[in-house]
Amino acid sequence: MPSLYDLSRPALGELLDDQPRYRVDQVWRGLYARGAALEDLTDVPAAVRARLTDAAPPALTPLAESVSQLGDTVKWLWGIRDHVGDATPDRPSDPAGDLAVETVLMHYAERSTVCVSTQAGCAMACGFCATGQAGFARHLSVGEIVEQVARARRRAADHDPSRRVSNVVFMGMGEPFANYDRTWAAVERIHDDMGISARHLTLSTVGIVPGIRRLATEDLPVNLAVSLHAANDELRERLVPVNARYPLAELHEACASYLEAKGRRLSFEWALIDGVNDRPSDIRELATYARPLRAHVNLIPLNPTPGFPVRGSAPERVRAFRDGLRAHGVNATIRQNRGTDIDAACGQLRATHASDAGVTTSSAVTVAPPTRMPPARPDLSVRRPPRRGPAPRP
Image: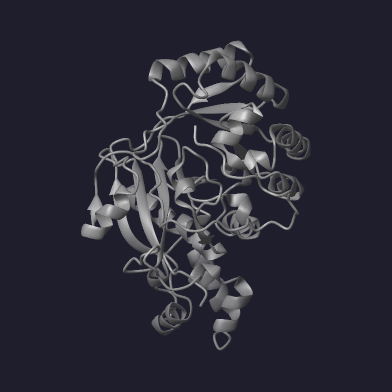
């Protein structure tokens, strides 16, 4: 059964084929241009709304919500239907669905940004990422991705009627380019029907080269962010195992092709890990790698994650790393941590839901992993060389 936001306009028309012709446009504009919930479309007959609810129910069921003490960051845990199979002892079921994903809404002075998930879990297995270590469950559908934006947009308006979500970053759970077709269809829906500019849409990848090359051929000039984290192959394979399949030289070439095709600024994400990738040698390697691409470097002070043997760099070391990059001619900024008073513990939001599915206010914004799943192949139509064995943790 498709969800409401999975329906294309023609599919919506088929559901409403006995209604006046204008009804489809009325519902579509209400959901996307106005950003209203279906139940709030009071200009649409109640019987029509009820039919749509029965035929295409919402994809996301709220399980838990965390709000920062300042109210500028909201994090949701959503239950989604498990299309893979029934729950097992290794994959327990939530009351509202077998799987769960997260969405984060961040309010800034000049904008509101929503960070969306594209998969339940992640198969990339990055050594410092709780989601990656938890494993992969399944791809999200177009509707499951788009509905995250729709829900966040309504919440932003509740926060301030004059405020709207102006930026969408695909940096939540999952690897967007491993679910390329559905992710890009969601991008088009968000751009064409919700009216969010391509320049305010950012796709993040750990370095899936075929995905970057496909992105270069698309019509919309969206932003590209690459989770780099190391600028030599030996270290990067330890931190980001997919580097064994798409090494740095190949990734650099794909990024250069994207810049040539789109002319958009490229960003490198760099999570600073104490004693691992925050050394003077890392500064030199990163500068050498980033400068020819005119890439902007976002430095991310890594939050500690219980159960993982890594620790974020100290604040003074983060600042020194930024200053070192700037001295080498690279534009670098330190990402502002948001919602640091929302619980940082791995899986805390799920644990809170298990005992009390209400609103929580505890401390940090880290992604709570879904249940551990076996890995799955990325959904890309390009052949890849065989993957090497598991990389050692840093």
